[in-house]
Image (tube, rainbow over all chains, first blue to last red; front, side):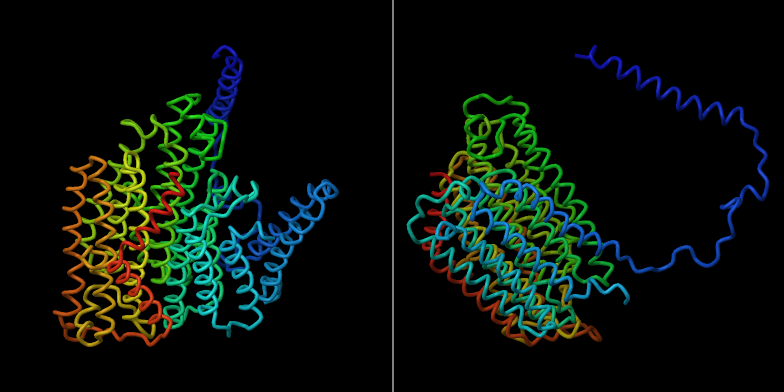
Length: 119
Length: 490
């Protein structure tokens, strides 16, 4: 049981050694001359102006929710389409119900103003 | 179409939820949503109540029965859950408007959460159960954090959400272990494989312990109760009512079905199985709940701890199911129905006591309220006496049936502990009545003014009716509970 995984553990050990070794070696061998210029947050960029925590409207959330609505719909539609003939009318009505439910959520989101990007 | 009749109550809630979403956006919030929601929920309760007294449906297609049972046990919980949700939405109709929180999605969330609760109570498969559990939980997380601008409500919601997801994960892990051990997700098949001795014992017991931990969180059993006081206190009071009655009923419904059907074999319910585990949980839950409730100064927080204590009595009943299935199951069902109406009544009275954005939450807020407003006092009186277990109210018979089932199951020591700890409970319940009738507000303290809301009054009348009716004619309700229990045990 254990013998099967032995190469994996050896690999794991070597990988850890290499990673730890490299960090230790560079921090020991590398030259360190810290200057005032080097200590600033963006060494070769421009100075930040204003507060870094600005308020902005996050539409990611709405986009993500709406994406889920359509993405899940697509996930179910593909296998249904592949099996369309054998599922027959029962399958058609079931899928219709599913789409109607998702449609209601879309109408709800629309009327609630979730698709108004400007405000 | 006729084959969908046994799940009509579930379909009712889905279509009502979707209809209310559209109604809300197209009328721009002018529709009387609490009214529509309550009608839909009461209709679902009526459908299931009618089916409860009708002969069981025959030849239900397997695509339903493989996942959702259509037995009387499920129907009984349909009625309890729909009634509890209806009371919560009526209370919300008064509470949200009075405190400027009225938005349509509250009722949609109530309907979909109640749907999840009903699916849980009917689930006969671990996966269906999990889908129901998450439908319920996600709705309730948002209901708890409904007052978005309040830091307290947000804290409550985040706490509940994080711990709740963790509990769901533990539950799912347990379900995976059980599936690994037995190769089935259906409760009945799991039970058959375990009874036949084909499943590794350690794996089954470990999985069972994880399932119990996950569900123990939902019923707020000690030591999985940490979220309860904060969530109950930070949530809008109508949500507190919903959580304490609907979430609790659904969790106990599935707890009982899972243990009785999936783990009804000799090994699981023997000396080292779940009855012993549940007995320990019951003992610490009721003692801790009652002692912690004594120390509270907020009535809402006291009710949170009292709900923990009641979970303890119910767990005692659950532990007795191992030896006395019929008596203990029907006692637990009766207790849940009684607790639903009693707790909704007390929280409703608490909602009634506040108005214009000022809520009554502490004992001091209630000082002298019973003398100034006798109707509010009466609502508190009936509800609190029932929670305390005072005859002739629903709560008395609930405790009576559960404790006598425990005695019949040879758990005399535990029953004595339960009676003693409920005597401690009398202390903090009576404290409410002392403040209502014997104290006066202190100089300069705000004086509670009850709100004027016909929704709240209707909810209280409905709840008080059932509290008294179940107390005066308990036999009828116990018969219904027995019929429901026979659906489970066979």
